[in-house]
Image 1 (cartoon, rainbow, N blue to C red):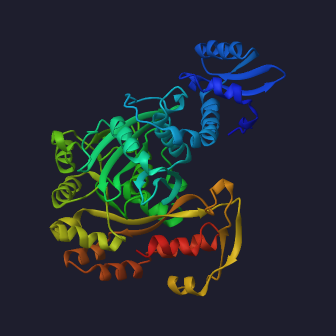
Image 2 (tube, rainbow, N blue to C red):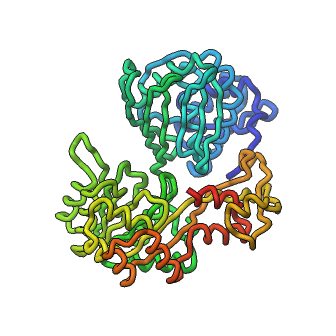
Image 3 (cartoon, rainbow, N blue to C red):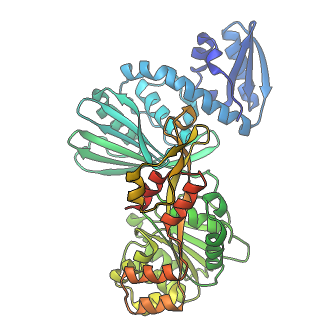
Amino acid sequence: MESMNFRELPKDILNHYLQFPQRNEFLPVACDKGRLTVWTISERAKALADYLAWSLNLDIHTESTTPERFYPLLEEALALWEVDTSAEEEDTAEEDNSEVNGQELLGWSHDDAPIVRLVNKVLQQAITQGASDIHFEGQANSFLVRYRLDGELHTVKKLDRNLQPTIVARIKVMGEMDVAESRIPQDGRIQVRLGQKSVDVRVSTMPTMNGEKAVLRILDRSKTILSLPDLGMENQDLTIFRQAIAQPHGIVLVTGPTGSGKTTTLYAGLSELVSDERNIMTVEDPVEYHLPGVNQVQVNRAAGVSFAGAIRAFLRQDPDIILVGEVRDKETGSTAVQAALTGHLVLTTLHTNDAATAVSRLLEMGIEPFLLASSMALVMGQRLVRLVCPNCAQEMDISDAVIAQAGVNNVTRHQKGAGCEKCQYTGFKGRRGIFEMMPVDEGMRSLIMERAASDRIKHYAKEHGQRTMMEHGLELVVRGLTTLDEVIRVTKL
């Protein structure tokens, strides 16, 4: 992405520009000797830019550019100007209940009420930085805004505690929730745009001892679906997974805690299977990715659309491949097993700590062992580890305590980020997966039929060449991609 010094723009130009609600179509990039250079992406924007220059008594030079070039720079500029103006706005914020569903976040204006600008810009900044969640929560003497970046929460703003009711009320209005009700949890949904991005925001509010807390889950529907190698799957792991999803029937189960990238992995695999010859159907809660060529259904309990009910309906739609967002109960699990046994490939997820435990969990749900043994093709465990920031990485010794906690003695040094502006002083930039693959062969099926404990299943898999997530993580440590502390954090649950 191109980089420009937007701080060099005179303040009077900036203040005039920020008055335009339609300014998400043009951007002042430089001013030299009374001549203002403006980038535009539409004919209408040229007229707005002309008016801006006329009102400032400046000559104008407009350059047409592409949306792909324009929007990243617009996000960069507004993120910078948001930092410069946020302190003033926090002091003067007041409630405003205007409707903004589906609005363009890059179109906020200084003419908006301060509380509207504050909430919109928090959303804009979070989406631009790639946050997965935003937390608005009261503390004893302050009101915090925190982003979850690369799986970790970071405080980004400390606001006056008196702003809490107003900000939460604004979020409720945006999410079409009951503003007057503050005694019970509520759920809502906000649809926004950020340039070319279409973003779905799921809102949850909860009454606490320090006032209402709001958590916003960000689902960027326009984000690119990564390939399996981009996720970190390689060599034997990649071969095993691709062989499993190439089968005409059976269950491929991905396990791990919330936020470990299970759905992302399934969609990366699904993207390799899309073709005119296949009917692919998914049911999710919510739909996180849009994939052309796939029929996607969202769970709607109010309308009676459940995971199990959707799978039963799918079977009357002549499917080849079914993706089920999550197995949460016996009904969903049993229906998925029946779909696999009747000649369909079923991709799904389950919340367990490792691959071996998934079998025990499904048996505990009440699924018959002989049905499970016949339908399972692959169980995979995964986690996401943060990657060392390449800009500030340096080699460091590993403490004896960390080595003892990991149970290894052949790794004594690793790459570790010292912290810099590019990684927001965390020492980490980006994430990738670590995996363990447990193909279900005849021996594994016998153990499932016997209702074997997860320890026996884990021992059998290890004897037959399974690499654990910890071992995969250690390989990344040796390659300088992550730290031993990080591998321990995500695997020692």
